[in-house]
Image 1: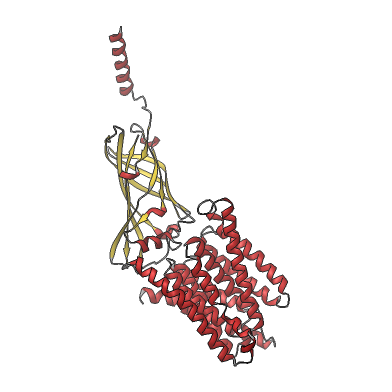
Image 2: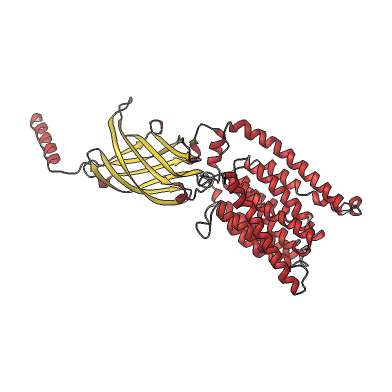
Length: 292
Length: 191
């Protein structure tokens, strides 16, 4: 198996298969109990993602982690638990918002603290950390809001597209490991789409999106802080993920779900391509023959 | 009288040398312009790719009479990595490899030095890279001594050793990009 195929197999295909198997297993177990939706989704997604992390980056070398890459693994574990909490607190949006805020603030501080003094100095360091945390929290809350309004296949579909396209943008921005972790998020989000369309309607919703948006948000924060990827590319990816809100626009509310989904896919793809093209050109211009 | 004092001083100096009275260790500063840190790693199990770090500083304490009292401290600016390809250098600075924003320096601190032969010492020490400290051992050869253009004392050393990058948490691209990294360090230090 070639190097590239190995990375795809261990970083996307197998994680997607693991997540799909667990999603199906949890769905059957809960269905026997007569529960239409369940809090097992974030756990299933997290197991798939953490498997990819183990194969691509490796297990954390210490606890608490020192290295920024290791925080991606530990945060994945935390988000598996938090996603379950968000599912069960579905009717308490204020508590979920506040919990998310605390989680984002704590993780941002722990992950970004080593850059204080090295990269950012004094007050500017605090402003950077606060801004990145605020952006992560805001974007995650927007995604959660849409998942609450439309708990179907559209949220995981768009998040999968953004994480997958974003993977290429990160790859061409000098970060293969973050790119591959973004690809892993895309893979586990992607398997939710056919499963939701098939019979597992209860797997979508607050819990799963909490894991996906939380994880993708941290990948983007690390990309800005540690690589560093130009902020506009990350902002553009975040904007691309907002297309599901088109479904809430009054003129589109009466349209078929397929028409709305197709429109969201086109808008998201257009924004992603608009970022990918200049990113790829910049990469080629400075890479020469370097392709890893 | 003056001649007698001079004779006495010379006599005492010769006596101190023959009696093995220790001469003070001499501290040299690494000259980054005339020092090189070169590494090589195998690409896709095919050919070796070479790179270097262009910025380093540190001190070398030399006690020729008693090498155990010598020491080497080196600090390398990880951002100064240069492999003759801008994109690859930026990639090497990223969290895939050195993660230089979080870990801006690579350091070596000697812990034990012992003489092997007239021109070679064995140096044990701690190499810290990407936040991981591991002991390494290398034979260091004295390559020369003299004076530079400004008349300052200079001394040169060279060593070659191999590390496993995975042991320092740099696992990206394994096994396509080799795990073994051969490092050659040539130092000119002055005082």
